[in-house]
Length: 95
Image 1 (tube, rainbow, N blue to C red):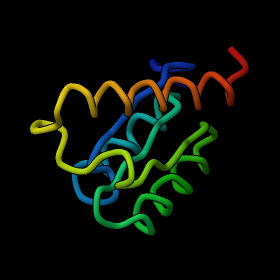
Image 2 (image 1 turned 90 degrees about the vertical axis):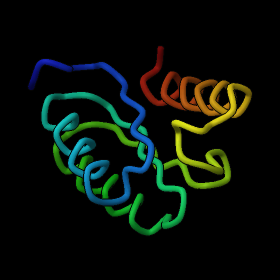
Image 3 (image 1 turned 180 degrees about the horizontal axis):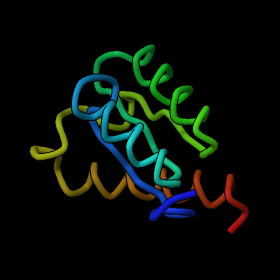
């Protein structure tokens, strides 16, 4: 498929604008994508569906885990998000 076949990407703020575009570009290159939107779960779900249409696995992750933009995210919260994402994607991918 592309340069990122089988890789997993986490894109925060991915419900719209630059984040949405990034998700779709990564998916087009074959990356499985974790989609996050802090304020609009419907947008995250829609982007996840668009990426899935490109043949990759997506997992929308809402504001329950990410309570603020990534640059200001406390290390503990980032660690929790990454652990949750890795566990979820390993289950989905069977690794």
